[in-house]
Length: 347
Ligand SMILES: *Cc1c(COP(=O)(O)O)cnc(C)c1O
Image 1 (cartoon, rainbow, N blue to C red):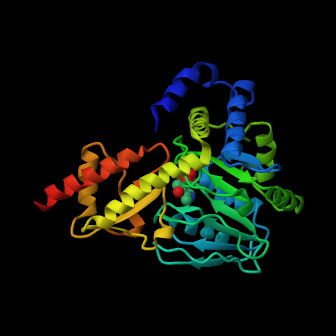
Image 2: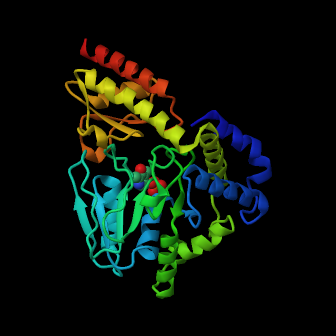
Image 3: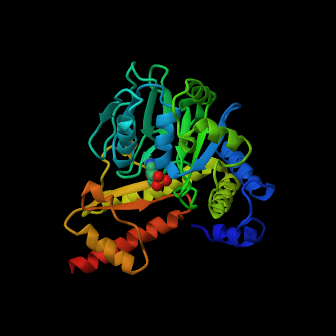
């Protein structure tokens, strides 16, 4: 995280922390976040930023209640996309979803079964480092994109999705516990249609309630205020620097540095074999002949943390965050550190 986000909390704490989220000082920050995100994503007229408490995991339950009409199609290529598919499978009010998976490190083809009213996939599968630029499959399914680790760091076009949802603890370098969703006019129609059907929807998962509150720059129940201050600061920074195009170019530079290093290093290789599927925000690098856990532990002991692979993947791997707050030169410095650790381990 950049220091200016922490400084923003200190500077704005006195007028905001501990005050009501239904009064102007907090609502102004929420409004600034909603406007700033609309600008960052170049959202067309009619799109809205909706938000609520609970993070992206809770948004899967929100979607199960308020976005999927009867049957969803899930593209599953890692841990996060599989969890949304599980939530839809478990819902007694929905038909069994169509779930199409692919091996870790790859991604399935973008299709939506004609029987499905909704299609869901991640923009970036954080567990494996595979990215998939949002696109509409044939048919007219509502397109839900899990952008938790992609939003603010990878390019996308609003013409290619209906709901682009995320939480602020990755590219937006804030804290967890909040979900945000950019919703198209079609998505807003779907929310109203399901609400009118009188389906039972728990109030905390009801997108129509969240939408009403968001339009008033509020959440249905009390949010963490520091999260909003840090998020607002990061969105302003991204917009000031040149918006999404600037952020995406910065992450792409970091990614080029990481992947080209792995390709020319005999004991390292990018896990994702197809270069066009490699993520610019989460890089996964397999190690050969040297124990990645040992490398990660030594890095951690020296203050370089969270280079560990996704534990359930079970590979001898490092996973590197390359979100917009990360200086591309720091990625180059990291590769030098890894080489130094490995040369000590091997000597
Ligand atoms: C981190 C992440 C999540 C989980 O986010 P929470 O806010 O912790 O629920 C979901 N999907 C993707 C793609 C993620 O990277």
